[in-house]
Image (cartoon, rainbow, N blue to C red):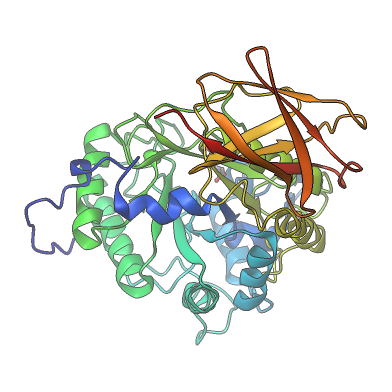
Length: 428
Ligand code: FHN
């Protein structure tokens, strides 16, 4: 693999990602769009076996439906995402209030979504797609123009490369992998790399080790010192990468001293599945985002474009509704740049986040007219002003027991939540 000059202080482990300047944008942005798109998308979640039976899966369809390699390669050769519109995707993210994108550059099937020089198992050399187009370059341009950061998902586990599972040939695989990652960094200058498939597995055997992860991390950091990398670069240990990656769940508590990001599907699949209409409501998305931010995490919400590369309309609609809610409630003040308060107990009526001297109490169970919400203080602080965001209505604040009673005036805001902004004098 290409080896750029080594220099002092360029090791990934030399800064604390929790406070490092290079992670500042990520810690502020809070909300991103995950995009699962690859050769599997061409099947749109369904494979009809030779005996006529139908097998359903999305990005794991090749393996879970037992599609023979030649058959999978044949269908990939017909993949033609001519409807991929980078600007529309970036607009959907922007409308949602999402501030970064992470797209699958390579998933477990090993198929590269850019014209890699390491093999021909990629969207330019093995598809029916316009050979002059480069989706990742298009996305990079559109994202840059919109002020949105771009990251790439990259699967370490590779079902297609025969060298992957052969211990003797593994160094060859690794060389190609390092080469592909150098291409991604040099060609598209991503803000972030999101690894996956680092776990021990069979069919094919995956022996990725902690040491492999450490080496890879150091290599990437030499290529791009301010790159952000998730923990699946190693064995998901706290010292691997910059942030933890709970999947389809939100930790009940903030994770002390560690960055984390919950990744979640918007329906029940990561990749496109044409029969999956089990969409999360915008209210659920907003509540999840508020919970995540109040516990100091990020929320990476997934969409799976169809065979032509288009984000399904129900997903676009939900993203837009989420963005509308954020805009109407202080332009997402409870989320962007906000995090765990450390000052109050998590309330049963919603979530509380903090940005500097302001607390944002997002109320998902609005009290009846005249009734109070109790805020339990974990440390002494004073509330000097309180308003309902987006309406400028007053909130009456009365010290009560172990904290404060907050009584918002006026009618309940539209669901899923109204936000109270509390200006505080924090403890010294
Ligand atoms: O196996 C993958 C799955 O397809 C998907 O990409 C998710 C996203 O986090 N990660 C893996 C499972 O952990």
